[in-house]
Amino acid sequence: MHDSKEPRPHTGRRRNEAARLAILDAALELLADADGAPVSVETIARAAGVGKQTLYRWWPSKGAVLLDALTDRAAQDVPAPDTGSLREDLRQLAVATFEAAQRRPSAPALRTLVREAARDAHLAELLRVFTESRRAAVRVVLERGRERGELAADRDVDLLVDQFYGFFWYRFLLGHAPLDRSAADRLTESLLR
Image (cartoon, rainbow, N blue to C red; front, top):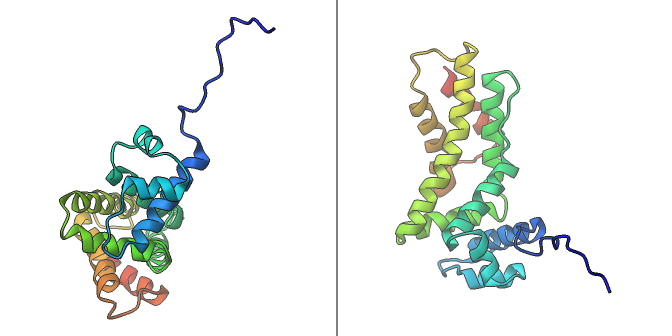
């Protein structure tokens, strides 16, 4: 018989990284496959192989799970470059953004989110927060370039960010022209003229 006064090791309340990743992957896949059908906490939990209470323990809402899933995937697919050159950083960011937006599950998940955000105020807020986080990544690259003297002090950084993402979203949603390396190169040159 073991009679110890040592505290028991922590059991189960802390986020298990494998479960967290399973939940984020499941949320993104479900959003990608939703085609207008609502994605619920129950379906995310079932697809991830965890209990619904696990999701609520770690996230306050379905929207928070989806936001975390999108943000996590964007951070993996579109790392923030810092090559020491504004032109190269901006080009790498554009290439990574364009390529990620054409892969599954990101592409269909983003299309579903945009479509559903028009009808759902909570998803509209989720989209706003997600796009602001992506805009911030471009802003960081531009501000770093400004600090190194590669971008004139009088250039409107927010307008440049709008141009970067305006170009992206227009082509992504309408599909009238490619989002490829050539487009990334031309966009970069246009922004830095």
